[in-house]
Image (cartoon, rainbow, N blue to C red; front, top):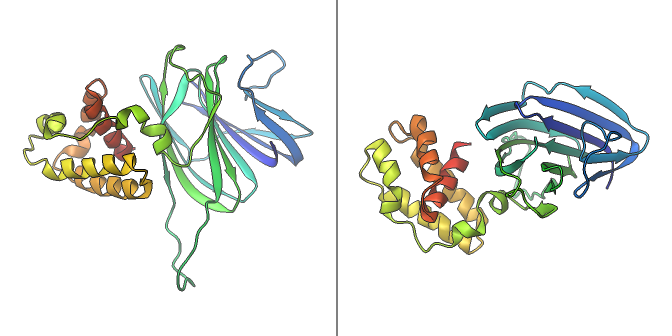
Length: 273
């Protein structure tokens, strides 16, 4: 692929981030999916860049944040870039994107009259090098854009590292909510007992109803409706008495439960990000 500007944010095992800001008139970049690193490769391998380039190796800005937990790294950043940029997030070995979330800052309501039509300002793709056990998220930015991005990358074993070379995703559901987690008919109040035990809350009907609406929306491909329902559930959940402080405990408890409970846990984890 050819571009003039690429910014590679390389996350280390300890969560520290190094930035490679690369520019030129035109150069070609690729993500090597099927070879190992050699002595001739750069620190930002598996990215391979060909051409006469200028490289600035710098620290990230204050808006770039990482949080390291056992077998998990949370990455948060805000971007304001012109069209034509490529942004890449390179994860440590054996880490893969698990939950991703975008947020657009509100527009200034000045001079906006009538209906406003928007087009997607770019595309993103997830690459995997199964030999080096490294993955990366790449944003191809077509138009000037400001957006926020959050991601949880989980550490997996060599056996569980994806064997595919890349994923083209139109939104977070293709990454965060696997097809396997949609193979359930309905969410029962019994599936929410961990929430009940943690909060001592007996009326779970509203949460149960919304979760089932989210499930059915995802099954029928109504992703916009599902996002709206998740936002509504987030308001209900996060305003529950004592829930915000106990949400991590609840999510961890759901990770090793049945498939219906795992679905609930994934939704709650997305809300908490």
